[in-house]
Length: 215
Image 1 (cartoon, rainbow, N blue to C red):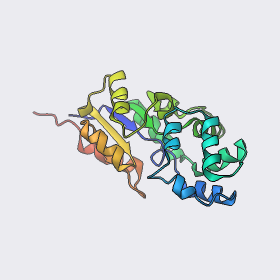
Image 2: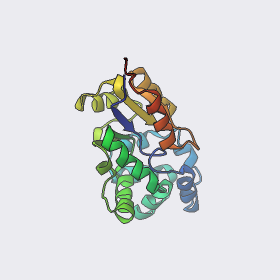
Image 3: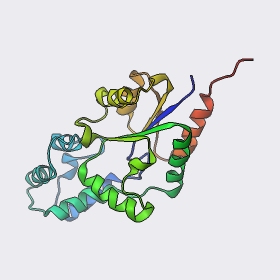
């Protein structure tokens, strides 16, 4: 069955990220235990709650101050937290435009309001858009859904709201646990590894899953 729908992750798929930059930024402010609080693969519960929109920005910052024992300002916390956000290559944005012309495209991202605000500023300055959602049929952000990947319910939300058939839907993510959930739900999947070219991987997969016309 041919692919008709594509669901993209955001971080490390569309936007380049470097989690070490956030760790280094907090360390420069005197935080010496950040890796025990947050890494790419393991976080204290309040990070999960913030990604799900279940605590406010103020509560998130308070948790960070308590966990680090430092009275960092709101702006300094945000600056350090946003340090991981890098860039979106122009070629990748063009690729999203091309995909949107031929497929129903979606974004499904684990993210939070502080990052979204910073990205809005970046997108306006760099691409003259206020939200990456403009590049998709619809974007789903964990902080606005009350849940995050790999919870199968957030996948089911995207699928049900848009009447998507898993057999016709491709999901692309850099996280193996997220890919595992999508695979169990019957979606086509691409696990994007460091160094992989998004455009090449997607085009290769789509080419190998075109419907065969019988004569």
